[in-house]
Length: 140
Image 1 (tube, rainbow, N blue to C red):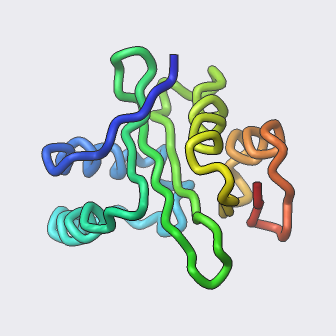
Image 2: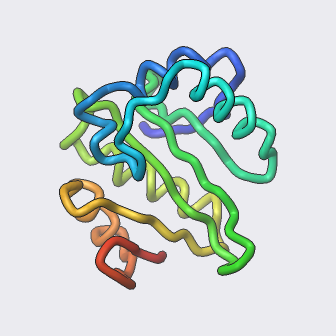
């Protein structure tokens, strides 16, 4: 029941709202809450990276999170960033979203950075066969 749709310019406010959820933001690489102008600048630049997938994650027709893949030329892999809204966590939806992303990106590898306290993300990556390459990084 998991699917993706491309993030659109009209998603600016929704993504800003999601990225400001404190229980979610604590797991971001930068846990500081962005100002709206900072978010807008980042968002507009991100949407212009046409070669890098940026999707809204959907469960049936409900939007439940986002996933971003940014190609890393140095390592010939995609760097992964993803989140599921807190009220949808613990149901395997993040794992299902990652599984779909792996199928779409295949044969490219994906690298994910996960903070220590984000046990659900660590668990999802291990479940999908990602290998831990350092304390915070996994690779598909």
